[in-house]
Length: 458
Image (cartoon, rainbow, N blue to C red; front, top):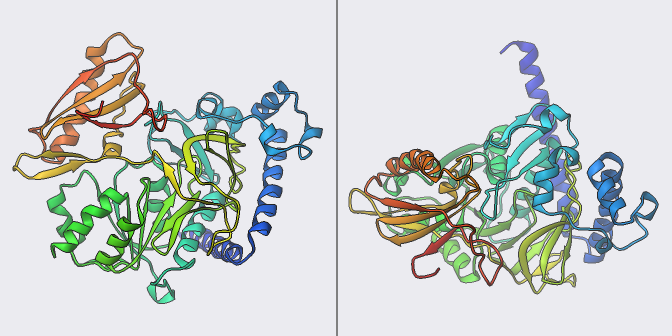
C-alpha cells in the first residue's frame, strides 16, 4: 500500500470512528429524555423521510398518486393514511426505490454475499424464510448509526459496564447464517473497521471443535443466535471453555427472562436480546435487567396495524427509503406509554420469531446440529421456497416449492450443495429426501411459514 492510499484509509477510519462516537452520544442523550420528546422527534423525521422519498423515488410518487395523495398532502395527514409497502413490492421495485446509480441497483439477486458498494454502502439480502430472498441497501452513514446503537445497548444499563479499559473490543461470535445476512454486515465489517479482536465460529463447525477454536481467547462480547449461545453455555458448564464476557448479545429468536438469567449466571455477564431484521438492522432490544422489549423510535418510526403487526419506517437510511414497511411480526402489548426504565415504546414480546435446531447423530455417533439458517444458504435457481422436516436422528425431508417442471435437475443441484454442508459437519451418514408441494402451509398462529418442522408437528 502506498503512502497516499494509506493516508486515505486512515482518514476514512477516523471519520467513521468520529461518526460512531457522535451518533452514540446522540442516542445516549435520547435515553435520558422523556418519552414524549422522543415520540415528537420521531414523527418529524418520519415526515422528512416521506417528503424525501416522494421527491427522489418514482416508486413512491406513483404509489401515493394512485391513492390520491399529492405532495401538498404530505404532513397534513396521519401516517396511517399512507399505504403500506411490502416485501413483494420491494423485491419488484428495488431499482425505483434505491437512491443509487442504476448500474449498481441492478446487482444480481443471486449474489448472496454482503456486497460493498464503494462510496455508497452495502447490499444485503433477507433469508428467504418467508419467500424468495429480497435485497436491501444500507448507506455507510446508516451502518455507522446501527453500530452506534450497539454501543447504546452496552451503556444503557446492566450490572457489567463496558469502559475504555475494554478496548479494543474482543468479540466471540457464533454465526448461524451465511455471509450475506444483515447481522453479518455489522459483525464482519464493523469489527474489522474498528480494529476489534474477534473469533468467528460458523455453525457448520463441528461442536466438538468449538473449544479448540476458542482456545485461550477471552472475549468481553459474546454474540450469536440464542440457540447457538446456549450451546456455548453447555461447553462453559462442562469446563470445556472458560470465557467471561461482560455483554452477551443475541438476536433472531425470542428469549424468556429465565433463559436470559440462566445465560447471565453461566457467563457472568449482561444479556441483550436485540431485535432487528434485514429491512432495519436495529429495531429494539430486551435484556436481563428489564422486562419486555423496547422499540427504539429514534431509529424507526413505529406503528402497528389492526392485527398488531409491526409497521416500520427506518429513519437513518434515506439511501433506501422504506416508508410504512409492513412486517409479519406480531407485537404483544404494544404501548407508547412510559414503561421504566427507558423512554421508548414497549412490548411484552414478539410472536413467531423462534428458529429450531435440527439435531442429528453424526458419523462418530455423537449428537450435533444443523442450524436452519445455515441450511438457508442453499441457493438453487428455480427453488422459490423451502422447508425442513426432521423425521429422525439421521433423516430429514426438504419441501421445495418451484414453478419449474424439472424437479430432478433441481434436486441434483441442491444435493451437491447439501452434501458438502453435511460432510463438513461429519454428517455423511444423515440422509434426506425431497418433496415438491404446490405451496407451503403457514403457521396458523403467526401466519409465517416455519422453516423447520418436526415429523409430529405438520
